[in-house]
Image 1 (spheres, rainbow, N blue to C red):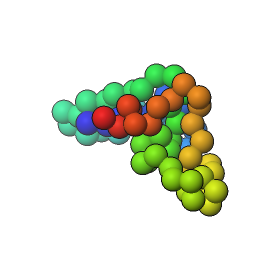
Image 2 (cartoon, one colour; image 1 turned 90 degrees about the horizontal axis):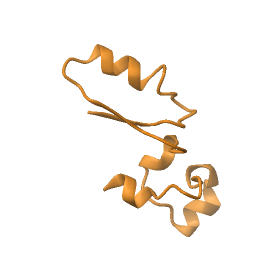
Image 3 (cartoon, one colour; image 1 turned 60 degrees about the vertical axis):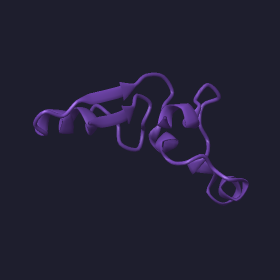
Image 4 (cartoon, rainbow, N blue to C red; image 1 turned 180 degrees about the vertical axis):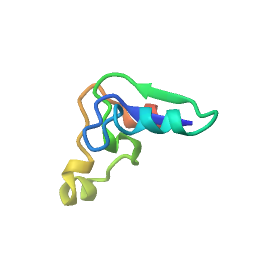
Length: 70
């Protein structure tokens, strides 16, 4: 299974997830709609993480990492 976020600008689904879904036999592609970006698949950030590497911790206000990962 390949899961990607529609708003991923690091590895855009059009040139990555869709491509590999056609190349890998019997794979399912799930594209999460809305402002789901590249780093939403990482664990929720700690306070220290937010200060150290904020770009990994910033999601659109309507994105809930915890619910996406479960």
